[in-house]
Image 1 (tube, rainbow, N blue to C red):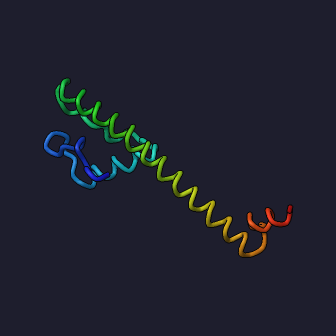
Image 2 (cartoon, rainbow, N blue to C red; image 1 turned 90 degrees about the vertical axis):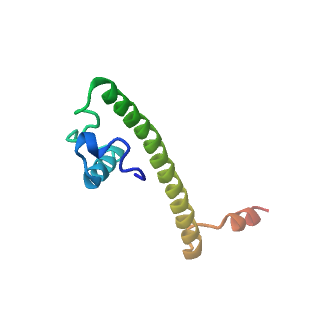
Length: 101
C-alpha cells in the first residue's frame, strides 16, 4: 500500500489517492469487487503494462500478507501457551520433562 498507487496513475485513470487506497485494500483483502480496474481507460500496450504491474502487486502483496498472518499466529500461540502455563492449565515443558525422570 506504500505506493497508492503505481497502478492508479491519476493522470490517465482519473484515480485520486483515496480511490487508489480503496483499490489496494479491496484487492489485497481478496474481496475484489471489480469496480476499479487498473488500465481500463488506456491504449492496449499501456493497459497490458498496468495489468502486469497489478498482477505483480497481487503476488507480492498477498505473499507479504500471508507472511504477516503467519507471524501473528506464531506470536498468539506463544502468548496463549505461556498464559496457560502461568494459570496452570498447561504443564510447563520443564515440569513434565523432570517429572518423567
